[in-house]
Image (cartoon, rainbow, N blue to C red):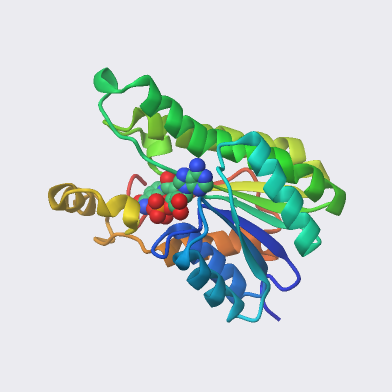
Length: 250
Ligand code: NAI
């Protein structure tokens, strides 16, 4: 018996072959979940990701939408429920960075990051909670970040969005617990993906010196935490932030 047999999961921001979202979707499929992924646009990479998911013997489909759009998020959830029959797990993983020091940050840099990282999570939670409430159960997983707790120079927009996700997570846990819906956040540290590939070697070396385990995490490290939170193994865990950071900021 696999950990997620019979469950349906929706993972946002799963369209990059090296990203955390794809790794989460893959881990869920390996453990028997049918998986819907939300991507920005459907292309050859998406086709390959879907083929890899289907190779696990599960149903998989990609939906293209802007996670920051309330209406598009609701439409995607409606389609997923219609085509998959239910929805048990939501992973709010879509995210962007538009870094800059506070004094030089434009209004657009602030708004874009808050919209894509934080409002998108509200959009999808708003859309899935009635479905999960009818099913009397579900697991919502929000991808926060260690900088949402610690802050980070040059990332006030990103850190605020990730701190917001923690407040959102804890509030949903309190509101939805009586209906059997759990909500938890993952706070990854430095994970080797396209997002962190943009950083210079010096910045990456400086980060690595702050990590007791002396290596960046892999998307699969984060996916394993998501698997725990999605599965019944975490049946009495809600409102928590689980760091996945090699000991950084502990
Ligand atoms: P990534 O850039 O590889 O993946 C982000 C995904 O979000 C991409 O597939 C992108 O297409 C999608 N996306 C962006 N804007 C979107 C929109 N408007 N609508 C729908 N999809 C959209 O980044 P990575 O590293 O895989 O990050 C995944 C999540 O983990 C993000 O929320 C990020 O903030 C978070 N995180 C990453 C860390 C890292 O070190 N890589 C550390 C802490 C948190």
